[in-house]
Image (cartoon, rainbow over all chains, first blue to last red):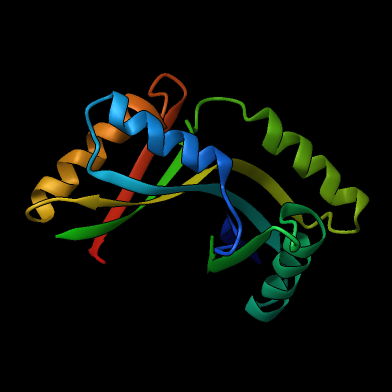
Length: 83
Length: 83
């Protein structure tokens, strides 16, 4: 059974996000000073072939912790649905 | 009033995503060949100061089209909620 996963990987709240900080500064230059606190992470979609939702969940979790996210600097969360 | 926006920017479906393709290949190497079709985009959170939800929506849309997404190669969608 094919499942689709939608994963969000973001810099930990406690850490600075230099890319987000730079973009926050640029908002002023394009006339949008009302926009603040920009934080930039990754959004990843993928498909996983698994027997059931629990197995798909375990595989996506493994992919996140081994390859897609760096747990020292990032946290992740994901949702899974039948494709 | 402060609103929080959650934005997803992804490569257009019609375009190749070389980063996603590389990660799909790596899944095999870490023992997860069941994972396919990896596509990688950005997830952005920010706050916006606006009088109401419609105004917040317009500002976030402007930020996306002017700065956060490249419409030639990417599409975006976002949700807004009261902070």
